[in-house]
Length: 538
Image (cartoon, rainbow, N blue to C red; front, side, top):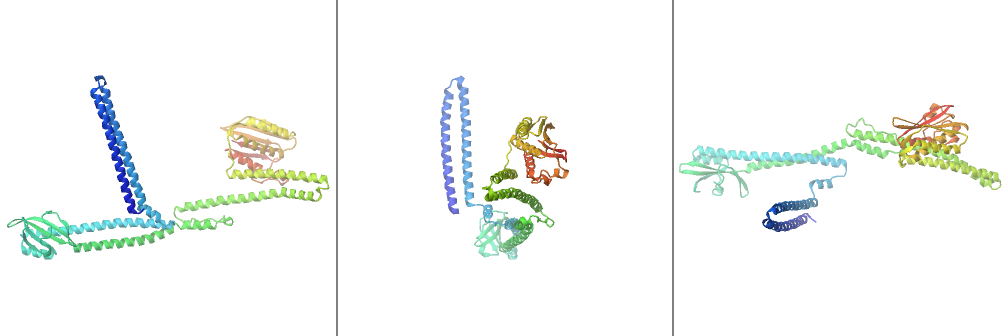
C-alpha cells in the first residue's frame, strides 16, 4: 500500500475502534444503571437492620463500575496506541529510512553519521539565525513606524511634515477622522482607503496587499477638530529581500557544511579504522606458515590497540595449539608406525612360509595379535586425549569413599600380579567421579608395576588436610632422575630409551587430564634407584 492508502486504512480502523468503544461504554453504563436502580430499590424497601448492607452493596456497585470503566478505557487507549504505532511502522520514520539505506561499510556508515550530526547542528543554527534576523527586521520596521508617528504627532499632524516623512521613509501615511472620513494621505496613493486601520491601535501587525507584505501601525491622535486615527503602512520589500539573502546564505552554508562534514568524516573515519583494515589484511594472509607474524601497536593510538593485542594473544594461543597438535600427530604417527611395520612383516612371513611351517605361523599370529592389542590401547588413549581437549569428557562427581575404591583396585592387581606386594594405608573421602578415579588408579598402578621388580612393594596411601584429600601411589622401583620427573606428564615422553618398550608415554598425561578435570592436581617425587611416588590432591 502507498502512503495515502495507509492513512485511509488507519482512519477507518480508528473510527471502527472508537465506535466499538462507545458501544461498549454505553452497554456498561446501561448495565450499571439497571443494577444501581435495583440496589436503590432494595435500600429503600429494606428493613432498618439490613439498610447498612444494602448501602454497602450500592457503594460496592459504584466502585466496580468505576473499575470496569477505567479498565475499558485503558484497553481502548492501548489498542489506539498499537494502531498508531502500526501506522508509523508502515509509513516508516527518518531513522529507519536512514538505517535502511545507509551504506553497509563501516566507513560509509560513520561518515553518514558525521554528516547527519553536522547537518542537524547547521539546521538548528540556521533556524536560529533566520528567526533572529526576521525578528530584528520586524522590530526595526516597527520602531521606524512608531518614530514617524511620534514625529508627526509632535508636529501637530501638519500636512507638509506628513508628506516629507512619507517620502523620506518610503511609507504611506493617512489620517482619518473618527467617523472614517479621510483627512489626508501621502506616499502611495494606491493604498489610500485600502488598508485596515483602527483595529489594533498601538500594536503593529503584518498585512498582505496583493503580492506585497506591509507593516501597518495605527494610533489614535488628538487633532484640532477632535480625535483622529493615524494610519501608517511601510512596505517590507527591502527587508524581505535582506531576509531572503540571509536565508540563501544559510542554505549555502548548510551545503558547504555537508561537503566539509563528508570530507572530514571520511578522512577521520578512514584514519581511525585503518588498524581494522590492517587487521583484516593480516587475517587474510594468516596461514600455518605465518602463524608467528604479529601486528605492531606502536602507531595505533586508539581503543583499537586492545583489539590488536587481543588478536596477537589469539595468534599466540593458535600457534601454541597448532604446534602441540603438529607434535601430537607426529608422535602418534611415529608410535603407530612400529606396530604396523611388525604386523606387515609377520603378514609377509605368513604369505611366504606360514602355510608350510606351523611354528612360524603360530609365532606370526601371536605377534600380530599382540601388536593389534597394543595399537588398540594406543588408539583408545589418543581418542581420550582428543575428546578431553574438545571438552567432550563429562564428569559425574559424587561423594566417593576412596578407601573402598582403593581396596577393590588392590585386590584386582594382586590377582594380576601376585609377585608384587600391594599395601593400602589410611582412609579418605572425596567429591569425584568414581569411574575416572578408577581409570586414574589403573594408570598409576600399571606404571608402578612396569618399573618395579618382581618382589617390589607398591603402596597406596590416603590422607586429608585442610578440606583436601590426597591419594599417593608409591613404589620402590627404579625411580627416575629429576630432569625426567619434570617432563613425565608430557605426551609421548618416555624418559630413558631403554624402557621404551614398556609404554607409549601417554598414560601419565591422561592421568593428569583426569585429575585436572575433577579440579585436582597430580605431582611426582622420584629418586633414581629408590622409586617414585605420584600424589593426587582433590
